[in-house]
Length: 226
Length: 226
DNA sequence: GGCTTTTCCGACCCATGGGTCTATAATAAA
DNA sequence: TTTATTATAGACCCATGGGTCGGAAAAGCC
Image (cartoon, rainbow over all chains, first blue to last red; front, side):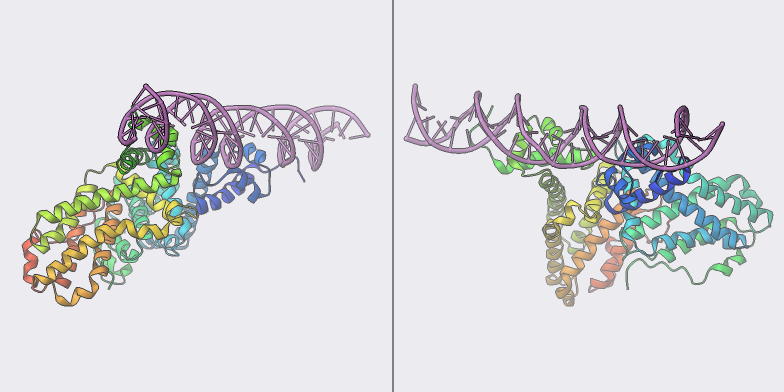
């Protein structure tokens, strides 16, 4: 039943994943540590063996969520060679996550937002830890940008701005995803993202003609459902 | 201290207003009935004299919030004569509520969203009561539309669609407000609303030339901050 | 087979906070 | 002034759920 040496990292990850599922279903305060332990088939005390508090567990769960995104992103980037295509991978992956319109995704996003906004929200208290949650994806994007520069596809002078560009892109994708999830009727996610990517590429591409390579349709703005 | 006969309606409203303030500050579960009672300068039991449960109180608070919007809307509509101007009043008022970027507004909106989405959310349980929350504003808009028709400004054939049009307008304003609050940087609320109103008016106006009367600037789309 | 270290968990603790009960204060009416 | 009625709140109840503790079970090591 109880092997003497356990891979703690693995165990923490497993518990966090189960917690993530429940938090996504019921929200933070309606999910009890007991339920998480039950779902994991272990005792509540065991959960507390690996996490100091419920808040820690929640934070770890969200971290796990973001890490999943990050590693999928790394995967996708690895699979493409063209820097433009690699940049596109970020947008594609975002759409893959949002598109299924899984309410869990929306619930989790709201929960994160809530805990960032509320006086005593968990992410409010740990603002200093939040950076590192985004750091992974950010660096992936930065690397793509740098690679693009060295390959002569992106303008050399953006080199000093890679971090800002990465942040802007990821923040935009976060924002537009949330919006899209909240009101599915009003936003054509693909068009919106296309629109942003166009502007971004126009700014950073050495040869704007390359734009046509990925842009499949004219990004006319349409907000209202037909 | 305690007069024998109290205006219950008034008292309910007063308590709901105080509750609203606290809910907006801390969110539902972090606001305790005790705090509400303290803030109101009354005992907790007194609160329970007027509300059966905390959930009832929350619901009443949100109702109060929406009622405030509704009565301000009624006010503004009364003050204008032109049907187009009256329709505009809805958009104007929405902007007035959202513009100050009061975090409370965002927090309340999120809380409502949350309780509509979560498995055991308060608004989930009372879906049947939700209609009546929106009914007031909806009917104000419907009346404006009907008035516009009878004055020959709006097309007669929209008469059968007034309710759908009203719902669409109010839902759009809800959605775009939320979006605007969430990511202040990306959305020019005025332009977005302008854009919607243009389309709406184009659809319902008898004489499209009247459009220029209210449209002050070309609604070019700009998403990215300059 | 002992001995030690690590893992696990059932039982417990206790603060919290939603909700109730009841005695008391207020006051309109007689 | 008395009385009936209503308003109020302090004290209480108790379920809930986060968090702790101490001991048992497992397993590596000799």
